[in-house]
Amino acid sequence: MSKDKIFKNLIIVLIVVYLGLYFAASVGYYDYKSYNKVALTEEQIIKFEEDVKNGKEVNVDDYIVKEKKIHNNKIGKLGKRMSFTISGAVSKVLSESFRTISKFVIE
Image 1 (cartoon, one colour):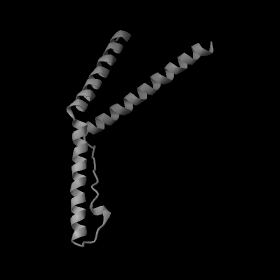
Image 2 (cartoon, rainbow, N blue to C red):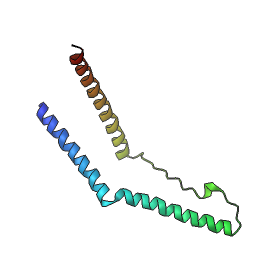
Image 3 (cartoon, rainbow, N blue to C red):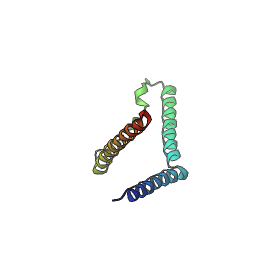
Image 4 (cartoon, helix red, strand yellow):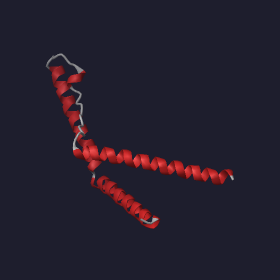
């Protein structure tokens, strides 16, 4: 593969990722997720207030909802491997780039 094709493919991938994130933000995906968390919190506040009115013993742990995200499926593992691979490649490219730039600056 020539450098031009690699560069073009990289630019296309970056544009697709950007558009995907932009679309998710414009559709309101993140706002919807935040709204669900707030609604759940409001439900817990109402439950807490009812328990206080009824004179029940109140414990904070009963009203805090902990989200457990399990990413132990094939897609999660693939994403994790891709992330580590991309991170390592970017790290190597940046290291080599700065090493090359430093040679020019020193000379």
